[in-house]
Image (cartoon, rainbow, N blue to C red):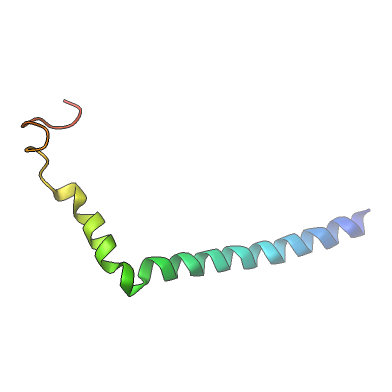
Length: 62
């Protein structure tokens, strides 16, 4: 029983590590892809946009 646990534990650790590395690389590719630059630049400017005209001169939550 202990041998089976050690075997399954070893397999889970190895494949789990590989899965996380693969997920990390895919997220990096998504985030750093040149085709996404404009989308992320636009999203980064959202907090700086003035929304006074849309809300009749009042801020959200006040």
